[in-house]
Image 1 (cartoon, helix red, strand yellow):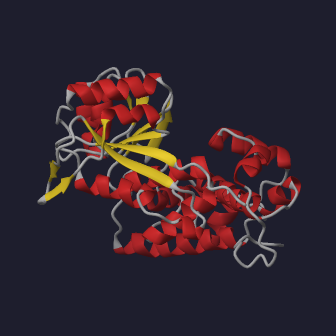
Image 2 (tube, rainbow, N blue to C red):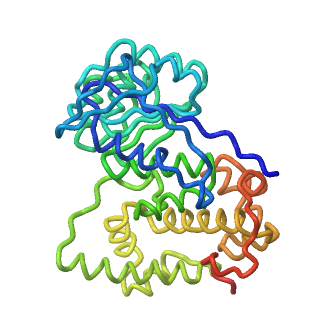
Length: 336
């Protein structure tokens, strides 16, 4: 008889002033039972210093079901953003976060939640990100923090921070992907009707489109679709620029303005995502996975996995491999 895996334990840290939107994101990702769709079980607990209901903006309230002592049992601690990013966190919350970090428990914050981690001293000397409109305040109030603006989320010493609103969703799905694999993250993303994969290195702020920019965006979308449909082929910026009818310099500039990242970074991210799917869903040899996803060689694929995922393709397969789909119907990877 197959045994049910122990649930991953997630602690949502709540106190007066946390954003209802971020609480909802955390709950939607980890608080919904999707085991019937192959998603592993999660145990999400709403923790607070006191068991009394916490008022949220908009007439909502959150009722804690555990005290902060439960953080010691958690596999991951998540701190929501704040309605007012300068809201001071209660001393028991800051102390509990420090203890969790000392125990080696990963801690993630959404949007202005970075200010809570900074108040706890957990970001001193570390790279961190928050909403682009709040970066100056974070620098001014916490000069020891290495504040970065052009990123959706960052990881430094077992601590994750993210930019505003949608970037919090990106970080939550990335954490699921890191612990449970790309297919689990994609399943959750599909149920949320959101994009399953945006790299943390994308810029937060993408230029507002103008009529000309709209036309460029359509052209670039067609180029990206072509690259994805022919992922196994070698692609250079110059060749993609020619397909877009632009000079390489103009293409790179418009590409980053539209997507928030460079053509090369985008292509590498798509190849890694495609390789993850093949490693999870098939028994293809590693050199074949590398060929089908455009890395060319197992060595190159291994180098990119080490850089971007801190693991090897072989170890990734050992951790996340599922029963292969014999039809290949559910694997939208090119098979040249």
